[in-house]
Image (cartoon, rainbow, N blue to C red; front, side, top):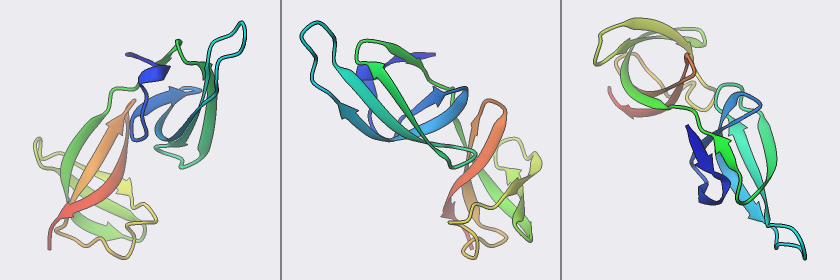
Length: 129
């Protein structure tokens, strides 16, 4: 799926170097005498947490990943890994607990899982015990 660079806003997702990233900042420069406005996009990788930047003309397109947000329940926690059960399909799988959620997540809690390009990551706690 393609998205126009001019339509991007913080919080949206795009692919930078084949990695799904969440946009955190957008800077637009004024057009030059013969050129178009340039857009500098700063984004954070969804799965690795690394900061990436992209510089493109404002009229160009970028690829956007297909993002699926699902709810899951924490079955158990072992070290920094949580066993989750999808609340729609009842499938169980293991995911690493992100640093910002470690210590606050407990068995029985409901979490939001974001899936893109065959990978999954826990994003936040939505409810629970």
